[in-house]
Length: 380
Image (tube, rainbow, N blue to C red; front, side):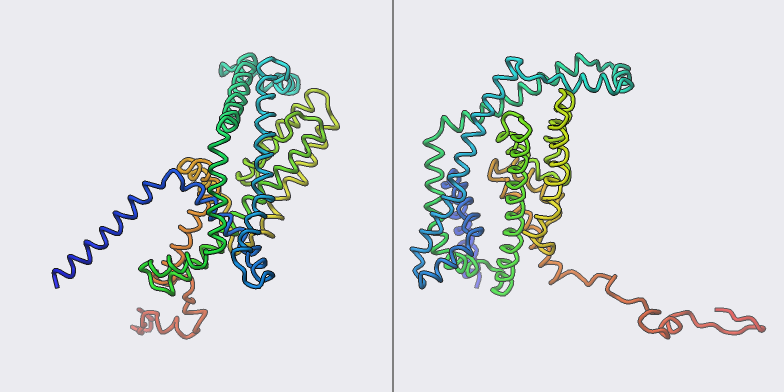
């Protein structure tokens, strides 16, 4: 009996050690695998429809679904990165050369809010200091973005290899995804029923969250870029991408970009452009998150905005660019696991237990302490 237990434990340790060594060996290539899994989940319905139309020919359906991902995601993303890199570099050069007037908002504050200027001066903050800080921050920020964009451009071969690997894995995830999931469910020591519920709920929550996050970010970025282009602001694609990324911040995300831009427009005398930007930012961009996200995600499966933000920031810190999606997915897994645990092991919420007086009018008197009459006075 002892020998059998020793063999079982040794086998489990060997399995874990082999798995850890394998993950360490392929760690550099896990990002393409991750993105392939994400797109396989997001485009699963398309693959299933293609498979049905093609009478069950899974390989052909997987190939067509992969080509659809290339046309819908990969090519637009490549064009977007190219445009952002070009505009970020141009923006940095113009700011460094002084062609862009960054002092107009400060001049507007000095003219319209002299009291605020005096208050800042009492704390040792002068307008010249603010101008210098604004110039330094703008140059440093645009320089960093331009450098990162150029780094991507200089590593075209490495980026192409990673995209190629992602598409290669994506094809097999489409074609063999069901078999892979069955193998995972079979291997996990959680019980088949619990594993199936976990997989179903996790896929539902993660798909809804990722779809809502990415689509809302894309829509807000596109609308913001179009508004900037309409009012004549340079680098509209760059600012649109920035608004899309900041849309993760609930309520105020994209406003961190278009509100200062509107202030600059008013300060430089572009009144109607500022009005267009304020109206468009408030009525159009502001309503996207409140209207479009519930339609895409559904209120029952949507994670709270603050949790999406926290998970995204943590994901970016741990996983890099992949954390933009990996963070919410890990958070979805966290919520699903705790929900399953609460349903199976946690006691029922006391709020579900009705009050005695509400459920049974006579119960209160039965639970109350008995009273006796002593010298004509009722005492407990």
